[in-house]
Amino acid sequence: MIEALAQSDDRIGASWFCNADLPHVDAILERADVLVICHAKYSVDSAQLVAKARCLGKRVLYDIDDLVFDGRYVHLVLNYLDHPTREIDFDYWFADFARYGALMRLCDGVILTNDYLAERASEFSGLPTSVVPNFMNQAQLEHSARILADKRSSGFARDQRVHLGYFSGSPTHQRDFAVVEDALRDLLMSDSRLVLRVVGHLEPGPVLAPFADRIERFPLQNVLNLQRLMGEVEINLVPLQENAFTHCKSALKVFEAAAVGTISVASPTFTLQAAIRDGETGFVAPAQDWSDTLLRAIAALDHYQEMALAAAAAAWSRDVPEAQGPGLLRALFGDEI
Image (cartoon, rainbow, N blue to C red; front, side, top):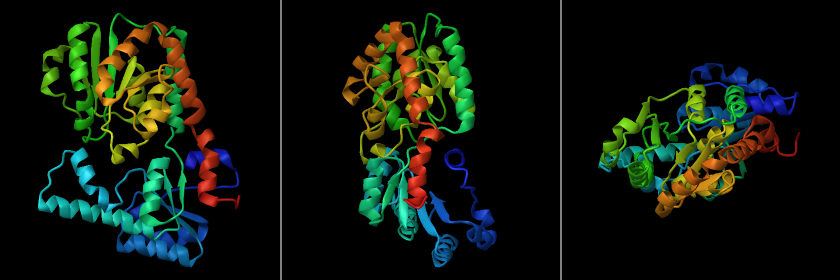
């Protein structure tokens, strides 16, 4: 966000602070015109921060990119995470959601990452909302540009194998991966060229155990190494359960892969479906059609360079600070700047 602001308008200075800096909050607020609170929970300190800012006439916005502020969705998230549902778990999760929501409602407006999530925030808080999609930072872009340039200079050279990649961040995607596991088992069984790369916190289920010698495992990566590992596969897998929680998620797994010339096969959630032109920049796979869609993607590898470059062009024109800066300015300042 700070990089996007710096590139959008040289009159704007932006910085960030964390809880440890709250003893200096008076000096911070004195210099700020707009305060953005990012994915924070209600506390005495956070409530006082908002109150001080508003007393000084500063605009206070709340920024969040997950559906974790409305208690009506706690059961859905626990089911999505396959989390225990003991009394103590309900006590924790309902309280956790309530603290996010309580702090949001103290603010003047909310910044979300897609229109579906913005509708949920508007229903919950009654506050005005703005949408600023997730996008890549400058370090990601510079590294991705080098990876993409190397692939272009080689003519997207490939070995005789077909590499499928699943790139998991947090250890919360076991059920998401289950959406594609049976399809992967069938394909690995029928096509000896296929290799599966799994990065991050994920344990493939027993259905894939017979193919352990064709599964590459990597631990959780930093953002730059992740781009390299994504760039080394032809097909990026983005399976998600389809529900209100996943419709709120961003398309970053698609555009990060596209930036390094890797196409995605993804579930048709709100943002993923919008990020892919099916058959042109990637493929959209409803839950019941993963096998057929992956076969389509593999069959399209003869024209891989054309599709990968189309996906890269879309990501480099849309998911970068320069493209998102104007929308961020409007979210922060409205028509004032």
